[in-house]
Length: 69
Image 1 (spheres, one colour):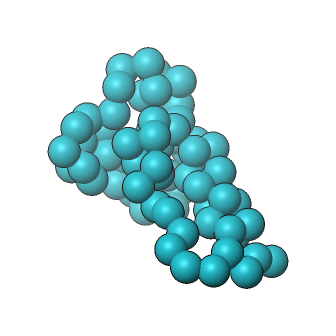
Image 2 (cartoon, rainbow, N blue to C red):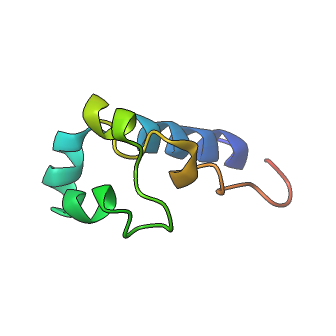
């Protein structure tokens, strides 16, 4: 798998991560919903949809620098 494909896969995983997955993996969903993982809180619509990290605020900053291979 290329670096670009791995980054795309990781971003997709984060966007699709459900509320239940987050609780099961880390037990920190309350912190994420209060915005403690960033400067802005998760939007109401995203939090209600059950995908707390679907907003680009949480994954868009991850970019590949250098060769994509």
